[in-house]
Length: 467
Image (cartoon, rainbow, N blue to C red):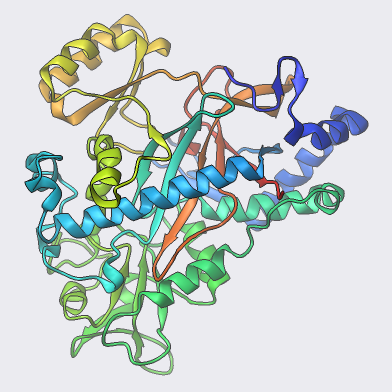
């Protein structure tokens, strides 16, 4: 296990000033700061929701005061790799909804795309503004050594967590002003402005003025509602629900106290199936009837575009390095985690014989649910999971249990290493923008590899150091 703070019993240079500060102040000051931060989180209302477990669904996400730190050179590699990946994924999405050249070339199996639950036939042939389907790409990255970074998965629909990135930084700056004064830490507070600029840049063809932008939320019961309202507030745009919008004369309008207001760009935080009951699920009360007709005619832009989810399917993920070579003519800067596709007989045989060593995931799963962490499972759990795989092998992939890097974390017993992953947020519009930072998620339980907040994971601030 690579400890990002120490190497060969020596503190790594990025962490030197932080360690000096912690040694000078001691654990009592850290504990005081932790309590202050928790109070701030409660006052601000930074929560997420978990339903189906009983009790109050609103949870306070565990926040760790000890930041994760990347050097400027480490960040340059991540920045280039994430942008390369976002460019290839968007080219792939445009391709599969038009000429499907990558499938004709035999690089990706047709069934993997066209029979994928996330593939939307209603989108075939539509040209979204700037040919961009996924405007916000959240790339989950893990580290295994000083130079070794791997992409764990891509999130091309509505990746969440950016509000934590911004609020984490705000709280850290309140808690440790002297560190921010003395260290050259790249700022992240420009993200809402970058997002707004990206959304304005994808105004639809029929927009002949400054675009009017809204954030479409399923409502206050959604687990990420705090983030929806937070981003709308930060950008200075309206937060709306489906009932607040309507379609008339090939345009989308918002109901206001001053009468209908035309809407040009919708940053949607609801799933494809609920966007338009006339096109997708007819029982949806979350979407806007007729929205897809306006989208087809160029009267409104939707971020991210319907159908973008086919690019973040975990089986499609295995082909992203091939996409980069096929579309961009480049070698991947960031590698995938080695992956076995259970739909292939040889891979299936290997996976079933090594379940105790692997992490197995549903290709359509998310949030850390529906997966088997082999080394942490019992023989009974492995046997039950094997039956699930055999019933539908194509629905599963498997990956080795990587020795994920660990960062110092302030826990009940003191400062101890805990496993982490990292999600930077890449914005794609007239340009590709990446804020110098991201969401570091931390597995708060000792030995755990599951960082998802819904399953006990916490968050850290991420510092990118300037040269």
